[in-house]
Image (cartoon, rainbow, N blue to C red; front, side, top):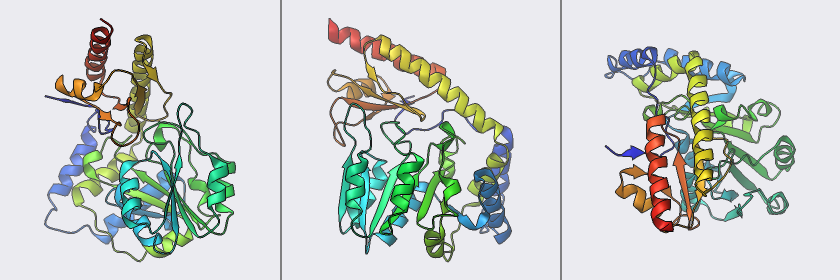
Amino acid sequence: MKIKLNMNEIPYPPPPNVIQAAKKGLLLLNRYASPQDRELITKTLAKYSGVPKKHIIAYPGSDLILREIIHIFSKDRKVIIVYPTFFPTFFAAKQFSRKLTKILLEPPRFSLNTDQLYKELNEPSLVIIDNPNNPTGKILLDKNIVEAILENTNALLVIDEAYYEFTNFTFADMVEEYPNLAIARTISKACGLAGARIGYIIGGEMFMDIFSSVSIMLPQVSLFAAIEAIKNPNYIKKNVLLTINERERVRKELRGMGFQVYLSKTNFLLIKTDFPSIGAKLAERGILVLDLTDRWLSGYIRVAIGTKKENDVFLSNMRDIARQANC
């Protein structure tokens, strides 16, 4: 069986109470989710996020939220993204935008070029930034940068906070003050519910005016699992702690082998290597990672943090590949 370290999934299964909640949903597969259940997930997400529920909409996947935002707002706005970014966001921007600007994150620091960004806000714009960034794992934004963007009357700002739980750093508390701000989040990562396909938007008024009129149906199984997970955040914290501890262990081991490994605020690591086709070599050994050669720069791979056993197998194979290359 292959070791999947290419999809940024949490390797730990949900606890029994979340599984039981999902089973409850299975008994209702012949029914659409009730208004009461849709209201409950909204209230639960609002409490979890610390914002009034009028700013929350649950959606079948944060990637679809981002795609829909781009589709709607790019009709009369330039789209500005950082690059690299969450690749489905880039593909949606490329598909729908009448005008697309990429702010490049240059190695080795991968810092956001704010001077270039501010200059681009010279016309109505939709700015989408993932924070932390995928695939670099770096935090790109601070409050001063966000305020500078939002104070520009040309700008709508969407921040993808898919990895929020790994940082506890958010701009969600700003949506009440800034109607032109939206936050996209997911329960796929820290909650370990990638298969449930539930995301949510924490939106300012300009976004909620559009999305609040849309009737969004969520699968019963996913809805009940999500509610139960978010109501019991202790296991989410446990997932995060386990992942961070393993992430730092793996990073130190790789650095000891001579690989360049970047600091991360997510559940994955960005690794630079001079060994050619390392992604393919790992795949031949049954280990799947994301080789960024075709999508970004050669020599970079993104590796999700698995279980300790999975990580040990990955490390052992990286050590062996490095040894063979140096022979």
